[in-house]
Image (cartoon, rainbow over all chains, first blue to last red; front, side, top):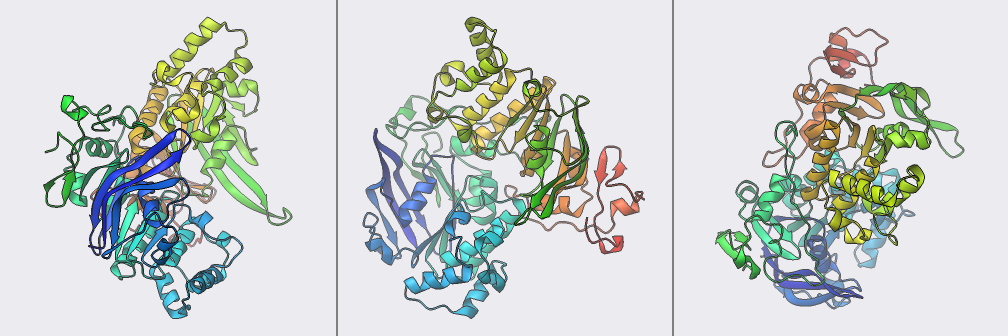
Length: 314
Length: 298
């Protein structure tokens, strides 16, 4: 098991109290596994990715543990995390455009970054890795502004994985790209895993259609909690949580037409996490909800590797 | 009726404006009342520039762009009939004012004579028309509303005018899957009421969901256009095929685009001056730029 997250709680400090963005999430990430993390805005998927890298000033580690390759990560100790960050666990941010220094050529940025970690640059290896994501060695002599959005995203992917991390977190890396670039970036990410440059990966996105192409299993989160986690095939064809079902039902596929069959969204919006209601957090929007749902549903493994937090699913 | 006839937009570029970039190159299509036309293309294809020209926010360099037979003349009278909704609903509201201030601004500019009582009724009707509950959304600040609600309030704002044509530029790309479809269904409802809609997107599946007609753009040029089902049922341009093949589908692996063996434009016998060739009624395609065409650029 590369990564084990157990009952992780991360809160944001605000003037009006603590926002429980991540409220008790637990899962395992196996060696070589790509886990897709899906859910709507505010469900805590980005917070989960960030918590594994660095808690910023507003975030507080309120409980739970994260174990990476047998060692517990010192999440709340920013300085102690330096030993893990970029070496063992690395991140590809959503907007690669703002992650690159506009005044440095890519090659110089790589050299400086590696020097700061006391590692020297192996040019052949670097070229090989660029080729793996479909970039020419020439990009090293270019400034970020000279690259397209998709190229920048792939350049950042190479930089993030230079030290062969155990876990790579890809946070919405394809959201700003168009379909042909999305395909290239997703292909490059799979390539990194297949070549063993990263052991496992968490692919955060709100696009379940795209996740199903890359992920071995998919975890759906809702309002800071886990809703359902299952192997990709099962989650997309036979979901058990009503939220997952409705989320997949609201996806327009190419060829679906309003005139033939209008799709429907999910009415309502997620509860405020400042003071979340007790019980199932989806129950106000759920067509199946009844009195039992006022109690918190336990996370149950209803089949091997298929866990659901819903009273109605078991 | 919106009509574009060989509309071209050239921007000055380079250090001293010496060079020029043709963002939109001889684009022609039309959108009738009650028709939703989707404009599909990747970043930099010129789709938003077309939207901005329709709204009169950018001037047309060459060609003619007319709405109900008149040239676009930005001004109060024009914006009474034509409105746009854009990608980011959060940046369209002033965070220090309540969200429904956008309605008050419309009243001040366009309906100063309307009484309080009647105006409240009109706002309530417009809000209901976008399938929102007035009690839930009126009198709230932008941060208290979801992206989908804010986006729908902007459409309601447009409905308070004498709206004939709506430009929707990537209006769902910032929204979650669960609310995205509600906004799209709303556009379908507007269309049924006789409104013309220009729906700009890079997402093929969203474009095909609603549109009667589709225009596929690449590098500022139309590569294929026509009835949505004809364009995507039988794509005749290699670029349309590549786009279709790259769309992620649930539980279906990506397949390579099927290559074309003949250029529909040249095989069909287009006359040399045509930008597009009509292969069947309502289906136009540009040259596929195969080696046999003897052209380098599509």
